[in-house]
Length: 362
Image 1: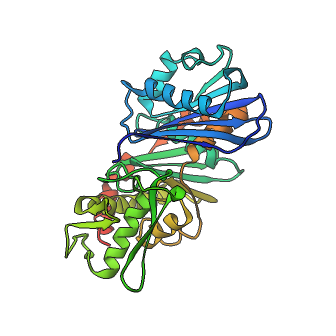
Image 2: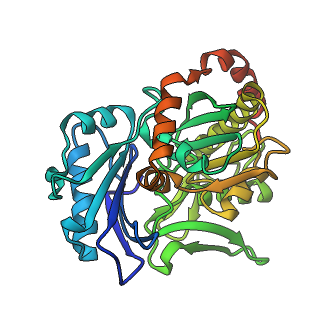
């Protein structure tokens, strides 16, 4: 994965003095979003990625992202009225036990919210994804492909969930030159009739690394040209170069191949166990754009029939925190669901292995 980088974005020049600060933490990134509660729109965002987040460095990374978004957006601390966090389970507990608004140079009376967690594998970072999916009065399947396959089904007021580890091919963390879908990421590939490889970079600047959709796109191009066989073996080269500086290796192909099989098998089995749902939301780096979502369907990461029904989103967790900060009834419902949810991971593990092997070939 690429070395540590920080990206700042400012969306508006005007704001009110009634802001919410949403901090979303994963194993490899920390993002801080300033949301204008009164004007109902995002004001600015800062994300730090390319770093392994653990309890040892989590507070320092959180502080760095928060201070950067506050400083570069010109926002005084007293404009922040609500502060929310969503993080993996161990970091959730760390925040609950040790972090206060004053540690981030915010007023002590800021309303602090830490999203609840479903299990050790499905922390508050996934709960935020679920919160974003539960915005309509209907049954929902929410799946997130970030480091592992995480899914929860909300049907009839009850919640079932599951977790299966992945290799990082569909979120970029397992790729040698991988990075999130942030500014500087190579995000789409195509090949001209004369064989020239073309690619686009988010933000139209210099490329910094390869996103998961670009890695999946490289796999598709290699399959079409015969440079990759249906077993996932590169046949005529060891590396597939994208530009002069970045490449997809055989190990990267294996990570993408394995993660696609995990995603397909897990979605199929969870759909059976959870029952019929009105909406299916799949999130993650590989599903983070319309083209990326379509590519995942083409490569078989989504069961037949579901591709026409699911919605896609790259990072709904940030918006999920904002929804919880501005809708107390949603947060109350999440606490209720997390306290009574049923983990069905073990129930489907035996059949999963059989389906995983079945879907491993392209």
